[in-house]
Length: 134
Image (cartoon, rainbow, N blue to C red; front, side, top):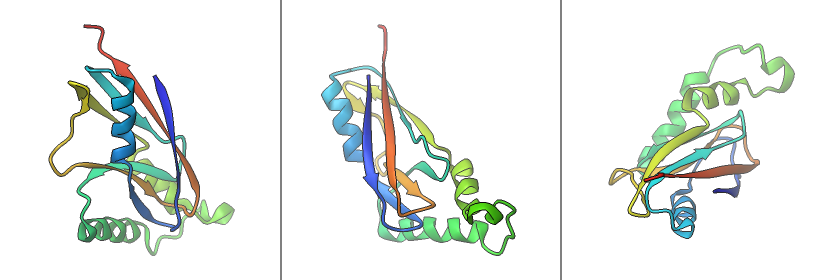
């Protein structure tokens, strides 16, 4: 089963909690046991699992900016978003999470976030559910 989520970002760097949308897809699927794959078909955004706490979200954004500040990237000669591509590659564009008893398994403080590195943009998130054969 494949579903898509569309998100409109409104900042260059941004964290958007997509946990509820992902969990709604799993619930609607009625799949009790399996895996969910969350994938971004974009090379300037990523997916992370982290706590939805304002200070921590701010810390993530500061870290992302610090990692790429002051570097003369060659790709910037084309479209000035080398930082976005590099951060996306470091963070990754997909995550696998287990499904057990019809629920996504995640830690107490883990939320699923789209991380925008080149916004504002319209982003598509592909959610693929793989059912256990047992």
